[in-house]
Length: 390
Image (cartoon, rainbow, N blue to C red; front, side, top):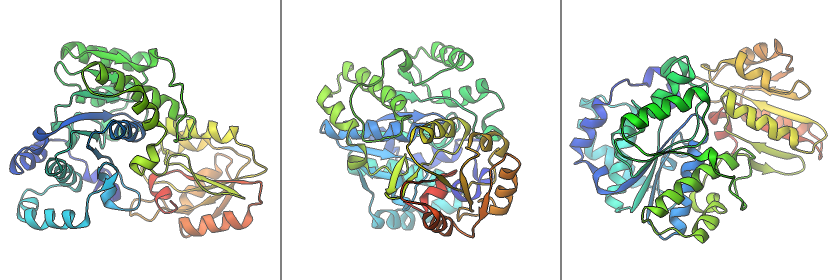
């Protein structure tokens, strides 16, 4: 599966997704959906949208990936993970087809989510793209609206080596005559979005033309203002299209995302004295935002617990980290985790110095022991590093 194994699990056709959908009786036809893609922010934006719909009284499905602690985090209704028994029964009931069709982990999980949302009779499901868009297993749906948060440099080996190529893959979720909201764009990507939307007669809305959302958010990362603006523009369009969403629902929903949906790992505070924060940002654009926020924090000494996966472009991300920090290099506990020694060696070439540790937990323990009460500990570099501390 992609979460553990990387690109070997990436499929370049939707044949299996369509086959499973047909076998299950096209469950996604039984509920309305919103489709969310993007390099960064698609998970946070998806949770924001789900939270607001919950506050508006709708029964809301939420499909996201990857999970941090429990597989069932991927499939939620009104913030509650699907039951363990449902997962077991689904695999048991459909095992012969799943094996015969040689479905990937992700293909199977998408089908499971759609089946569960249909059984639960959700009013609306917010569906986060796994990777890319055009060839993603989720792209069999016809949503009421599509969202593309932004485009950055990530997964180039699968999506393309230019921003235009990556944008074209993400824009694969734009459907005929279905409105699309673009959270942030660049000159190169805006032209791609406009061209594809025009071809498909899809009304296109650029959220960056709107002001930032003026009310408080419970997701405290400074980068969340971009996601909140994207969510707000999306909700205003849906409200004008007949969905019963009031300003009070939006305000309460965006200030209660964690409470309503259980979102973890986005500038999440783990402890105080010393302050310890984690964030799942793992590509250049995401880490730039997080490093800017670190600079805004008040601390005496910065300690960074850092672990990454082995397909990261270290020469692109390591220069973003501060040289005056104390580093604790580790390997996230998945097969494609990069050895701590290799990470340390690469980091040293960029002026980042520290010791290596056998696990994320031992690295965090060492940082906590070394840190004073006015210090700040940051844990990140990978979703899988964060998964071991939340």
